[in-house]
Amino acid sequence: NAGVTQTPKFQVLKTGQSMTLQCAQDMNHEYMSWYRQDPGMGLRLIHYSVGAGITDQGEVPNGYNVSRSTTEDFPLRLLSAAPSQTSVYFCASSRDTDSYEQYFGPGTRLTVT
Amino acid sequence: AQSVTQLDSHVSVSEGTPVLLRCNYSSSYSPSLFWYVQHPNKGLQLLLKYTSAATLVKGINGFEAEFKKSETSFHLTKPSAHMSDAAEYFCVVSDLEDNDMRFGAGTRLTVKP
Image (cartoon, rainbow over the protein chains, first blue to last red):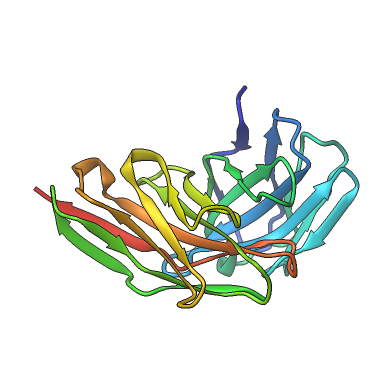
């Protein structure tokens, strides 16, 4: 099992550019989520999905889109990058929404200039 | 909605001395509580979890935490710190009301030789 994989590891964008952060898991987990990590603020939930075809907003969804066409993949799209989106992004998955024992990817460090 | 407060942003201990990282939570329902550890430039790893079974929870690497409902606390302890314990620690709460997890701001643990 590769677990949860994320690409790219690092990315620099200019303000206004768009891009997609990729996330995949090979554990057949139903629940997947995206977080951003900023200093002194812990991790904040951006979007989550409880299964293929189902997504919902988390705590800080503005400026981000997600889709879940398959169980394995959960990409995060930045529509028009802003410097406030400079952060480290983590994707996570878990077997279900009861135990919430999440497995995290290695993270993507994004800088928006 | 649930929330979690980590009472110390930074804790410094000497190698071989006890570790105490404090966490208080707020939840409308019976919560699930977790501690995650993040080593520098790494993803998050689950240390332990409480999901309404035994109130004293043992985790990996000698860590344990006690769920105290009357104090709404879930403090993380370890009898003897190792240099390898130096990392950032996150307390996390989830419950049935919100379909997500809420992270504390994190506690950075420094271990002095």
